[in-house]
Image (cartoon, rainbow, N blue to C red; front, side, top):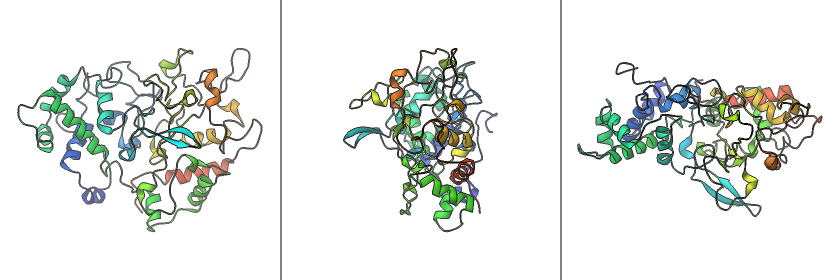
Length: 387
């Protein structure tokens, strides 16, 4: 803490890493903005409140519902805060051809509605249920009075008479520079150390990696990709930035889910329109997140419906073989499978790839011991490893 407890700081990477990867003046200014909890209305909420480095750059501002609390009392968002881990590598939203069909790739937020980090950073600052600032003038006034104002001015050559828009533009650029910095993409996990030959994965972790990549077992690599033949860490991000519909169970703890006729359809809204070139087959699909630092996160998936990484993995392999574990029954006792989707979009759920290609009562692709091994491997993707 500093400046009377108004600035929130966190223990991030080991000192040796920080010394070897100094931030640029722009990223350093962005870091100070990122951890400044005075840039909300009322004060008390920072970018780091929902993107905590100790929680894998995720977290929900002390909310335990699975979605983020805002700065005002009782304010809650409708989605789990997406991780910012390695966010600087996310490509702009675009379509690519896959078997002759358009496929959505990239973009920021769960639905890809922002193309660049400078655009993404603007959103939470002015959203009522998040940081709730009234507009650019309010943000600029707070930046001018911040203890790091001189750093921001120097980093972006702001003169003493710079307009509000210039201060806001500089702040957004600074936040983007910080999110592209090595502090958020350090590549210092056990997995990275093993790739460099500095350590070896344990037998359980190595087994988990094999199951993770086996197309007839976990097949996690179908979306959480890495290139085993590449020595470039950027080829090991454990996401292909595409979109998938997993048929998640509804999170009844979210106030927005109280209306059983309301559905969050990701690429089809409600926070964006269905991108041109895509059909209703993408409704209910959300961006595949990186698995780096996944074990640190308190909530999983866009609706925050899971809190335990083992249960997340179990859901993947038992969703279709044991649906009664995940979905409720209606008043007539009928199982409400894929109950967070309108019936017309249930056909969009991924049921073709392993491990989803199972039917009720069949043996799951992974048993308990194999699930534990996969989780052990995913934990090697957490940054901050020291031999």
